[in-house]
Length: 76
Image (cartoon, rainbow, N blue to C red; front, top):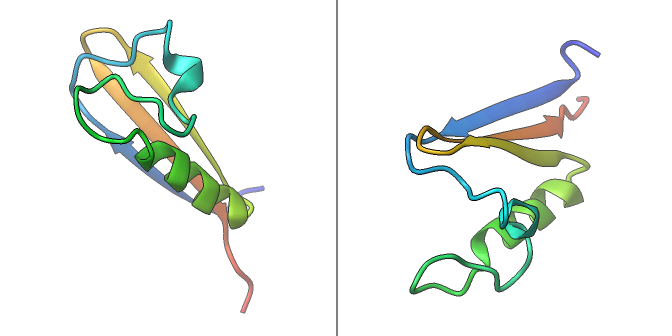
């Protein structure tokens, strides 16, 4: 329903997310980098879901990735 959610989009112009790993990017300890623990997106997803929200993404090879976060507005 219009106006019931806060929507945040974050995009980059990187190389995109390889379709072969796309289904795993929110898993704890999964990374395609040579350093880091692979916890960032897993933690972000958990926080968003704890607020009854969701995080999704679209990605195009050579063009980049767009993450969309949707969180219900709290009523005052």
